[in-house]
Image (tube, rainbow, N blue to C red; front, side, top):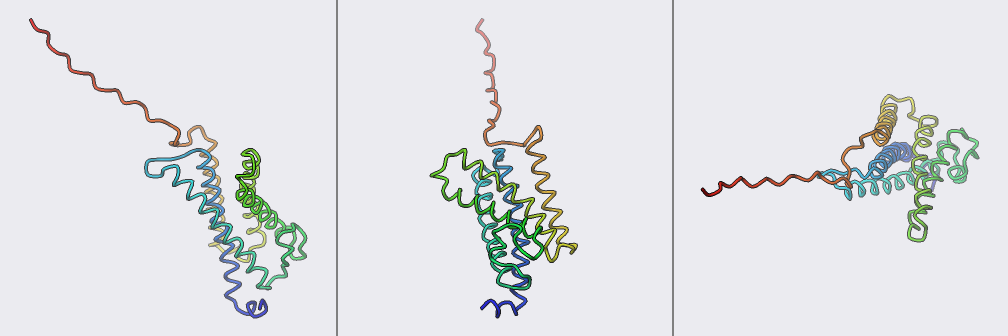
Length: 202
């Protein structure tokens, strides 16, 4: 079955495309996580909408990452084994760059598993593991820059550049003195108009 699929270029294009989409979704997940942690919200973008976008982007990132891993192994264009995608730096094919991708995958799997078991874990443990999602992103970027088949193409460099600028801008905004409007901030009270002075009778 894998040999038949490997003869079609569609599988290779699917592997490449799913990798690019995974990076874009992971970038959106990181940016969404930063805005969610800051409790950012506006009248047009309520906090529950921001949280829902963050959650949906993370779920889609996992789906496309799984598609990327499955297609890249089944395709057979490069000698990558199933073991190589989960055990870092064990591959004979470009072990350093592929190992970074394996580490990112392992961290993301840990985040997904702990999220599914969130009700059985303490909030401190869940948050500590959840922070690993932020480590996935630079590893994924480095993995793509080092081993991606399109890593020298102008359009791919543009995608990488936009991802880096987006996360850097979100981090700068989050760590800056003003993080924008937040859901927890209350509008300032509006002073009630004073009643007009009544004329006293003579």
